[in-house]
Every structure is written in structure tokens, then in C-alpha cells.
Length: 533
Image (spheres, helix red, strand yellow):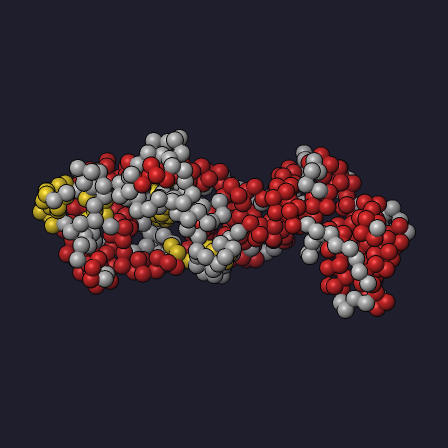
């Protein structure tokens, strides 16, 4: 791991940095001005409910929390921290997700703990084990430093037993907090404790009477019979707001962020944590990611963008870059945002080396690479991702990677996969994106009116260019033609749009000087000839 964030030049400007990870980290500094008692590491937690497949919203919490963790370490000169990724895998399955196989089989297990339900994919010990494995796989892929904690393991091993006894001692205090927030029908059957039925294995939601708090005994009705039952050693779990609070207290959590939709839950869990003798963690309430329709992403609906989908069409760094931006603002998360995110990441990375330390801390790429535990990449790519996409699109979906590299080698002498391995990966992304999303929409129209003469003029001027013409030289020619009143363009935008639609088959496109230089003057003239034919 490279400690990019611990460079001595960063600690002083970090104290006043307005980048949101530092604003969040200063909450922890205020919580422990002299450091956590006994030299204990500050504990940051993220939560995951494995009732559905993990998606980028899940990844988001771990990434952003890691950014806060690294910012805290910068502020304190490397104070000890831990990050726990907690899976609520003892939760009862409430509904069958839409995006998993064997739904009928899962319906037979409704109400049972997720770790007691067979894996519908047939690859793991249980449904929860399958989803937990997916979570860990993509956290590991990004290089996160975290500790995975299973709710089931904690409950069943007895690690939470003392905390459960504490909940029973404060059962009435918790009811006094929760009952006023519930509708009358729900309040009539509410209990902080959810016993696991010894008969059916279902996580029950029934009224519970505390029999002996120290022994962990409660009584409740199960299948028409009142029984006394131990909640210790996995005999029960807690209602999730109570569970959240218990976890904060039992684990000593100092920081946890959560979505805006959990604002009220966070308030109630904070009150319960205080009733249990603990303290609510610091945290950020972030806005939600939305799908392309503006709807909240849901694990059970599966309407979110998966990590695998993003990585098919964009880089890991671009994903982290997109997630970093404006956590308190809702933004859409779908395939269409990927190309811009890739280029904005590369652009911001290009500015980093020349920036002063205070400006570096405000640059999103600092937080991206600090979270990954790696040094800032030094390579600057010779083309943008947008330009690469246009090249691949005009070459056609059947173009090979070797053909694309030949074009790039003409544009940048000596460019190849060995020299630019990052660009080599982006070519794969561009080929996939073009194949799946660009090629099906391309439609080159015929030029009309003054466009015909303008294209003919462009062809003639390109033919007269010297062999060493630069992209700027070509761009100047394009500008001059667009400004020529004889061709009837109201503005340059109309001329560029005509070029994109007649030559590339799209309503938007690249800087034409750079594109023509990359694609080649002769190849561009061939496109013009095809358009004018």
C-alpha cells in the first residue's frame, strides 16, 4: 500500500481543506481531540443487507467511508483506524428479489435468516453466503482495506450475547423510543427482539415478554403455544433499528454514513444507542443514486447499475471518481454517464502534478487513489476516451483491437499496448460500449443545402494539407468553413452538428481537428465522399 495521503506536505492544508472527506474527518477529530481512549483505532463501519445482489450503491458506502478514513489519517498524521464491512445476513427474507433465479424455491423460505436459505445460484452454502462473496469480491478488486463481519456469525458465536442482555435490560426504554413512531397496528405487535422460532426457523415478529434479562430468556407465542426461549447464541436477532444501535455500541463504531432514506431511522437508532449507554457515531447523510428514469436504485428490483457493467464500459478509477462527486446531491447512475466520467477523471488527473498541496486535496483524484492505497499514476494518455469512442464507432463494430492500435500508432508514433497499458484497457471499454450502445444508434444522414458545398470545401482543403499538419491546423480549417456565411450556418454549433450527423452518424461528437488527425486525412476524405455520393 502506498500512503499517498500521508505525505508531510498535506497535513497542514488538510486542516482547512473544504473537500467533503476532510469536513467529515474533522468530526472524528472533534469527537476525540486527544485520540481515541487507550490508543484504540477509530472504527468506521459500512452496512450491507444481502437480501439482494450488491450493486454500485453498496460499493459507494465502502468507497466514500474509506475516503473519510484516509482523510482522518491525513489530519492526524496517521492515527490508527479500522473499517468494518458489516453484513446483516441474519435478517429474515421479506420478499424475493426480481433479479435472481429460482424465485419459487426462495418463496418457500420467506421469513428465514438469509444464511439459512439455499443459494438460488447453486454455488455457495446459502443465499447470504453467495451475496457476501460477491460483495467481498468487488471490494477486494478495488483494493479496499476492510474487515468483513457477518451478523450471523456474531449472533451465533455469542459475540453479541452481552449486548443482547443489555437490550433486554433496556427493553422498556427502547419501546418508549420506538412505539410513538409506529402506527397503532404495528405498535400492537412490535418488539425490539425478533426470536428465531425453534419450530419453523423463521425470524418471528411477535410481542415478546422479558423473562430474565441476565439469562437472556424471553417468552412469546409460537404456533399457538407460549414458550420460553433464549435469545443468546443465535436464538434471536434484533429489529433492525435496534440492531443498528446495538452494533454501534457493541463494536464501538465511531463513524457510519447512510442514505437520506434512512434519516429518521438514524435518529431513532441514535436514541436507542444512548439508552444502551453508548453514543451515536458521526456520519454523513448522502443523497441517493437514481436510475435513468430518476427512480431510487433497489437491490431487490435490480434496477441499479452493476459494478461489472461499469467495468465493461469504463475504468475502475472513473467509477470511484463519479462516486466521489457531491455526495449530498442526488445523481443518476446509468450506462450513459460512463464516458464523461472517464474523461473527467483523466482530465483532473492531468492537473494533479502541477497543483499545490491545498489544491491537490480538493482534486477528486487524490481521494480516488488514496482510497485505493496507491501512488498517483504518472502517465498522460494521448487521446481522450470520447475521441477513442468516436474512432471505434466510425471504424465499425467489427474493427479489431489491432486495427485500432494501428490508427493510434499513426497519431502518436510508437504508441502501443506496452507503452500505454491503461489506454489498452480503455480500448476494450470503448469497443464494448460502441458495440452495445453506440453502433445500434448510428445513422448517417445525407447532407442538405449549404452542407453539401461546405463538405466539398472541407474535402478540398484537407486534400491540400501538408503531411505534417497538426490537429490545430485542421481545426482552424473546420472553423473557417463553419464561419463562411456562404454556407448558411447560423452558428458553428450547427456546422459541427452537420459534420457529426453526416460523417459519424451521431448528433454529438469530438473536436474535429483531433478526430481527423487520429482517423487520418485520407480516411476522413473517404467519409466525405460517401456522404456526398
